[in-house]
Image (tube, rainbow, N blue to C red; front, side, top):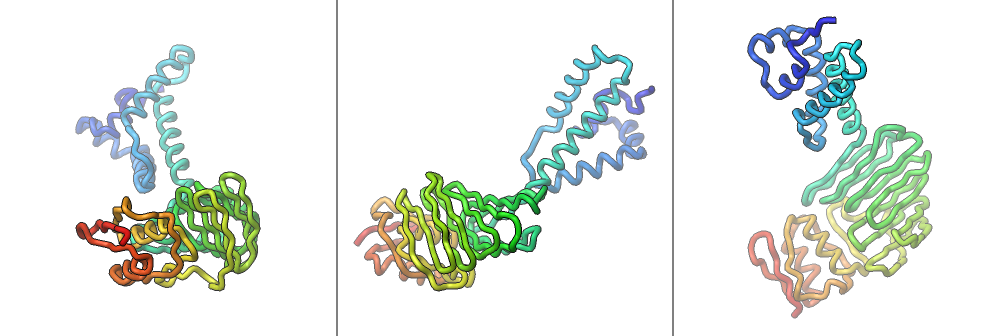
Length: 302
């Protein structure tokens, strides 16, 4: 069978923009051109990790050449097209299978999952899940903080670096950072498990926290987290987590060398005014704050 293209590296040269004018015109008039362009356009919209197209095709060609010495009766060019198409389609489905939602400083977004469950992401947080087999495998990965309203169905699992949460259908808040894992149940029942197998079964109005290895339990009265309505509230929370919350909300940083970040804070701050927020938190704790520049604040114990 005659190779419809000029040589075995035709597709690789096309991706790299190395076709001559005659080859380019010939290829753009073919039906194959439309198919390849559609696939490439789909991949370019995925926001997936970058990869070297030329390197990919070189590897494919080397593999083809090795196999060609053993199977001569199949035209060489058909291997190139088939391998290229499979590689591109494989990348497309691999990257397209994982959905990622994230927020910036001071931003909140609401994500509706495939089963109608709802997730509200707090600032500087990220949610990941796979679309495939979602009905039987409702698992999401969370970095940061989020409020979940989960529809009843199969087990719903939230995976974090500090612990996991398992539910059937309920409303709960998760705040996870390094050495900090907090779960608050607003409706239904939640099973929370820390990285060292610390376990708690929470019902409505119950809260569970692991902070620096210490396990804490307390009761709450709110039906949803206050941060979703513009005010973040803390209950005997380590100052380190309070400061992290301020940084995520107002896109600022703190110099903290001169304070004890293990101090506990109970109270709240408004998202509308940074000066008021700083005063609300640090004045009662007898900590002075000075703007070193627009984005960095120095904290000193008075």
